[in-house]
Image 1: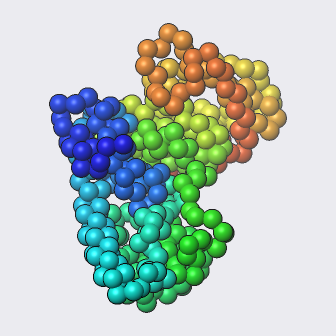
Image 2: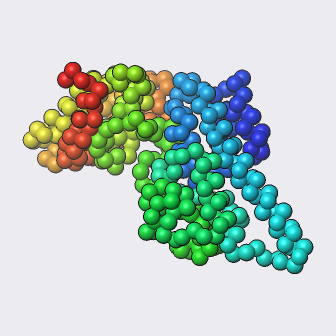
Image 3: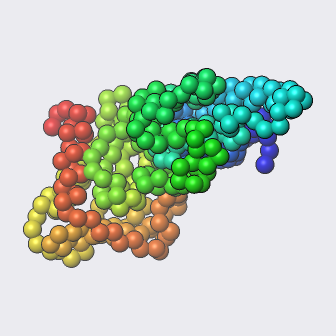
Length: 340
């Protein structure tokens, strides 16, 4: 593994292929991940605006590494000061560090976030500075989160997601193990890695574990953007720019099918241009709707999260979840479709 500065230079090298620059950014996050790798990656994707298709905004790679490096410089300064102090203490006969300074020994004790999607949204340097100040003061209360300063009845913080360091937990946390980068229960890691994540402007409705529809406007009038449909945690759309209105109509048709009583055999399901890489059918039973789809073998470049060509997925969703998704999403989408 190359050093952080070497990888950061590759991220900034506009002559390199975008894929190589992206992997260099990944190496930078492996070197410095104050929230844990997955949560730090998600933070950079959202804050720097890393798109699914990097050619749409190649400069976002530079914004991401700039933010990461800014916070890393602050952490390195603290680390160097700590090492110098420990050398002096060892020379004076203090062989063991103070218990209150245990957070220096492992970066991920700084602000580990078990849920990759729940982490502070401020710039990394702001949060790292706040945490370093709190830890150095040794006056942090267990009832207050040092990362966001919100009341915290338990770990991790319910407001910002940080599982902060505590002398009482050193060198283990209350569960008896060091925090590890385990997958969260929300958006699948594959989608986070490929930057297919909701943004600040994303609206929608439904439960991602059942059925959820989302729209992220990219045009000034809000009529065009990225429409995504999740079926049982599986992202179905390809995350390319599309018009909202046709997908609004298709979602309403799904709602009508969910409201219609009776069972119907598998029928072709057409959901518009961002789903053209899939062959889809819809089957309804008395209580459920069954979505079946596979990637078209002849499709040249399906999204990286699409099922393998020839692999058929069959996902069952309760009718009530489809109805709920429409009822939550409709008013959110109508704010852009003002003529309806």
